[in-house]
Image (cartoon, rainbow, N blue to C red; front, side):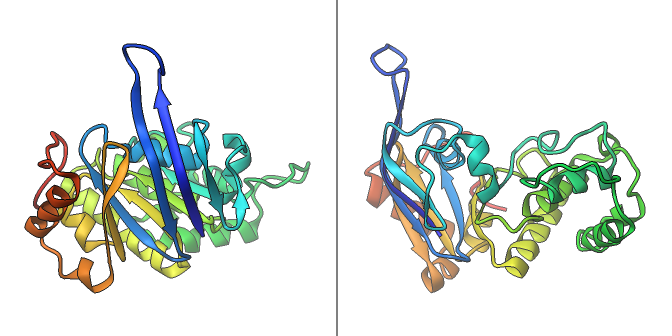
Length: 265
């Protein structure tokens, strides 16, 4: 479903600020894979997602989504293949628009615009059923402005919007990092439910090692723009944080250090 092959990216080449963000990275995801990604500061995690999304052009290598080579496609042309949720709950929704209007925008993404009336009764009924999945009571607040919602409610709504059109790949860039622990757990539970129900191929960056081990069927650790640890299946299920750190140190030749990563729950 997703193939990243020999991709490299260097920012500010030839200057004192030169930074090699991705170093000949190769990664293959099968359909339905739910991959959690962890790594220290500057490991290349977010850059990898940005490269898949087309935010930056690759220096070399290729990116294929669902059999389509998107390497040279601009960000807006890749959007139809992808769903994305960012760290900031304020990103991904229109604060001054109603909940149902935001959902309508997501549902019509990629479609030609017409002069027909706004939201139909059929669409409104569908949105109510979708919102019930979140179990946040938003199905009773269809006409509420999104800007009035809490951070957790907005992030859950963004997740629903990002997956409404069944994207080929779902990109989650630390989408619970700005939430309090209780709300973060709720959003993660919703994430797992939506991904499993729709069999979505997903990449989720997280700063919580316990979550990285518990969630999904595969875990990768990045270091200096490369994948240095890749575990899946039963090996991942039985993994402890201590074992994960040992794998990282054995593969990278250095100790794991990060001022953001949480080593425990």
